[in-house]
Length: 317
Ligand SMILES: NC(=O)c1ccc[n+]([C@@H]2O[C@H](COP(=O)([O-])OP(=O)(O)OC[C@H]3O[C@@H](n4cnc5c(N)ncnc54)[C@H](OP(=O)(O)O)[C@@H]3O)[C@@H](O)[C@H]2O)c1
Image (tube, rainbow, N blue to C red; front, side, top):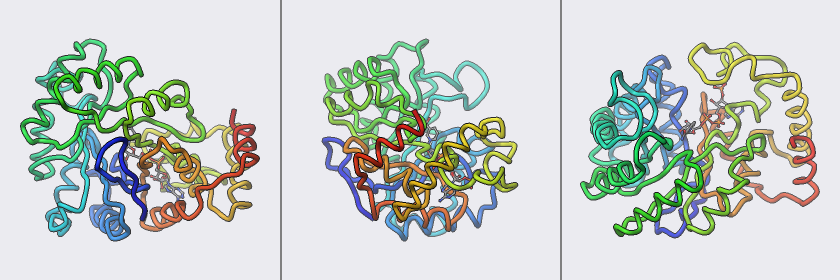
């Protein structure tokens, strides 16, 4: 594994991180989830990304991660980075969603309890909430760091102007925002509009989530929808109607470029992100050790010729 410094900080993250959004919940076979996490750690994937609501059911990914820690990983606590988040619907009533101080403080306490951790390495505001004054959310995040419940603060899916305001507020209180997290992959280019420039200016780390577009940017769906895939499962966020013939046509063409590079499409999709200097790490998901191993080989070649890059853009854009 290779590691990159996270923006202007002393913290390094592995180029490939593991996210526990899918495949690690109460509906998934625990032994398999544990095998993937242990294997990841053995390969230097030392950054594990959680959120209060990951499962299903919500909370169960954190519970399972806590169990995996108790099953052995806890002896390596100082060798791993564990992140969690609050910002999406987690429990009923007015305090289980949004970005109020009440919700964020209650949520991190619950997340610590579920995982059995004393602190998170990174704690994120999971999304911007226009109904909560930004200073209320930011103050809660700062206080979480001051209380020792998290070492660093992150923001996820914030509009650029709100992320900038939040970073300024933190700086005023001598706390730096460490990292920004958003969806970014060959198919979804939104961060290129303004976020990448903002991240360079602020010298923030950037972790790209869903770098494989939930599996679309792999060979998984080239010949239909496999019965064990995310798109076939009732609990996922990728649906059969997302797998359109137009997308599959593009993906088949991308697959050929990957083959010419001597990579799987999954490897090329990750390498395409890792080639960008703004990217600290890509947070991938995996439903098997085999997929994880395939993805880890992406770092062997993250160089693209200008002609490869323009061919990729011509296929997609
Ligand atoms: N901040 C946020 O709001 C936010 C939102 C979403 C995600 N995230 C974070 O990002 C993480 C990753 O998201 P994601 O799971 O959507 O990432 P992803 O890497 O785009 O998709 C992972 C899925 O792709 C398939 N796959 C992975 N490697 C493969 C390979 N080598 N060959 C074929 N198929 C492969 C698997 O699907 P199958 O299950 O079909 O095998 C796997 O579950 C999450 O766990 C979470 O930590 C954050």
